[in-house]
Amino acid sequence: GAVVSQHPSWVICKSGTSVKIECRSLDFQATTMFWYRQFPKQSLMLMATSNEGSKATYEQGVEKDKFLINHASLTLSTLTVTSAHPEDSSFYICSVPPGTSGTYEQYFGPGTRLTVT
Amino acid sequence: AQTVTQSQPEMSVQEAETVTLSCTYDTSESDYYLFWYKQPPSRQMILVIRQEAYKQQNATENRFSVNFQKAAKSFSLKISDSQLGDAAMYFCAYRRTGGFSRLTFGEGTQLTVNP
Image 1 (cartoon, rainbow over the protein chains, first blue to last red):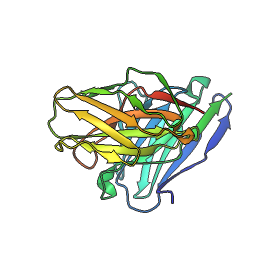
Image 2: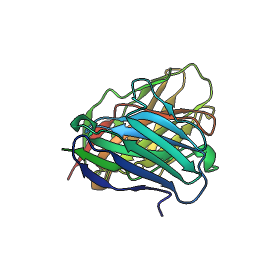
Image 3: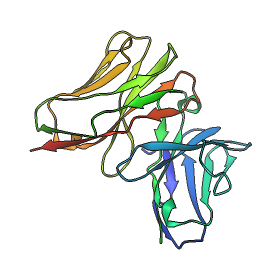
Image 4: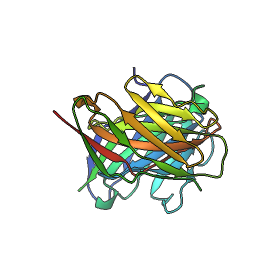
C-alpha cells in the first residue's frame, strides 16, 4: 500500500490565489520531507527540504516567500503556493528520505498536478 | 556538487528485446548509492534497482540489471525481455550515504516499447 500520500491529486486555481498541498507519511514518522517540482517532460527538481519543528531549507532560486512550507507534525508537511501564477503550473511531488523509514529507499507521494489559470 | 547525466532523451525497443539506458555521474564521494527510478504515465515514482558504491557486484532485479563502473562513474540499466509495461520515463539518481540525504536526478530517458 501507499507509504506517502498527497492531497489533492489535482488542483486548478485562479491566478493570484493561494493553494495548499498536503503530504502525509502514512507508515512512519518523518522528521524530514523533500518537495520536488517537475515540469512536463523534465526531471524532478528539489525545491526544499521540510524539517519538522523548524524552518524549511530552500534550494537556490526557489522563492521561500512564495512557496511556504510547514512541517507541523511528524506525519504531515504542507506546501502552500502563494499568489500563484500560470508559470507555477507544474507537478509537485513530496518524498520521505530513507533515514526516517529505516530503509535505504526514498518513498514518493503520488504527486499533485497544479494548474493555474 | 553531485551531477547526474542521462544523454539519451528517448529510446525505443521492440517487445521481448533488450535495451540499455546510459547514465554518468560526478561525485567526489567514495561511498554513495545509485538508483534507477521508473515514472510511468501515472507519474508515481517507482524504484527499479539500486546499487551501493562499495559493492563491486552489479545489482540485478529480475529482468533489470545494471553495469556499474565506479572508476568511469558510469551506471547503465539493462532491461531484458522488454515488456509493454516497461514503457515509461526512467531516471538515474544519486544519493550520498546518510539517511537524510537528497536524491539528485538525471534528466530522464523516455523509453518506448514497440509491440
